[in-house]
Image (cartoon, rainbow, N blue to C red; front, side, top):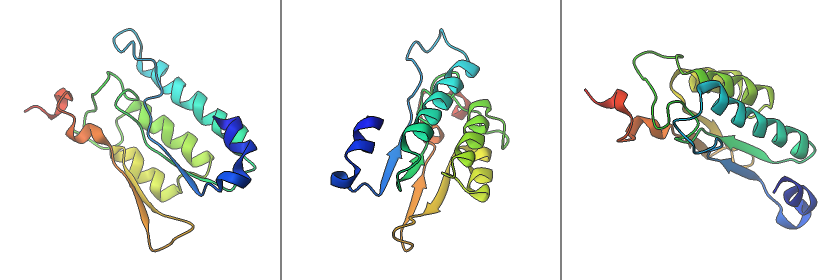
Length: 140
């Protein structure tokens, strides 16, 4: 995919890519938090190396398989999700998130940012774990 986009950017004229996660293997009870985090960080590194010369904005967000256990995130306090805080660092280093956006993302796993090519518009990247009926932390 990366090679195709890079090779065909003149034809595709891609302004942005929404990356919606689900990067880890779906052997959900056999993996670990560091393992699923590593999968997303590996793909982040692939993006950086393959797409570094292209003028394409990337709007990443984690999928339901990108926190551990799968479908689960504790919202009892900000900044406590292991995976999200590691994605924050990597996505800030790529300039996909500004420092302020990364700070907001680290708290609860969501952010908002303006489109560079249309400042009147915004991307709102939503953490779908907040309404996942399989997220046991939401059951009270």
